[in-house]
Image (cartoon, rainbow, N blue to C red):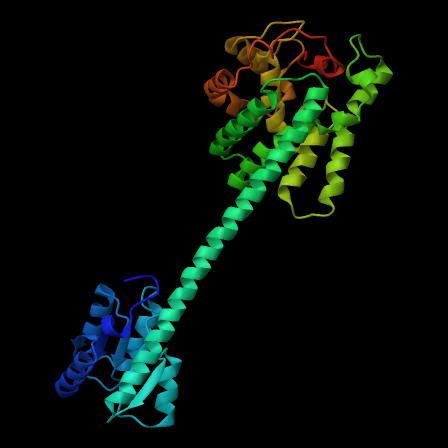
Length: 392
């Protein structure tokens, strides 16, 4: 049987009547027209038969011993698997009120006894066709929904790829190469998953938050495109004035993303991008910038990102240091080394990192830069900017 539903010749019709004579007559008539009829003498058996094998249509008497037809129909319509089955009442009741009641409980038609079977057959055929069309429409809507979801997914994927590419361009300008952004994305997601298991931030750390964090992570340094080359790429130490300019990348990035967010105020991904761009240098102990935020005033996404980003900085080679191994990196982040202090990090996020550390090591190994990407190069302003915590 296909999704369009049965045709009249194969329709499965449940006939419910407590009169053996009526059942015999209807059985004979239905068989002559090619229908498959199932006969039951009361409401209780009708419900059991319908539940066991949902029919394509039900012919239902009203006045029966025990449960009457109205109650049978009510129960059928209360069952999600049976509520769409068309019910045609066949009854000797001719009062208008009874007919109205039949439609009120969910019947689709009403035929008064004694009946002509040509009339009954016409009503059956009409409602089977309507049910078939209804099924076709439901199938079409399901297919359409799937097509729309696939197109939305493709659009979303292409948008995320574009965002990542733009973030990568900003990173290349700063001489940061390799898989840094991809690794930090993975670290952020892994850390957020472990933090969610700790259940300290309630419903905030849901699947949507974690997915948004993964995709928004590359936007954190997007403001670097607004920093002049003579500062961003300067090989000598930055002057205090130049360092102040360097630190404005947080505000430049947040401002650029906020202008887009103003057009799409309900976009949670963009909101997270703004938070990351502005606050990824804030520290739990208020020693960061640009706003000197402390503790829970720092957006949670930025509190997660800072550990992911600093882990990658420690594990990556730099002209002024080799790549630290996983054990040394773990000690520096959890115990401090004079530049990076545990007080810089949200204690709960740091605890989640301790649990996730083996996964971080596996991610770093899987996305390790090749030797070309790891070759020594001049230290840029970006790296010197981070010397107050991890030298980068």
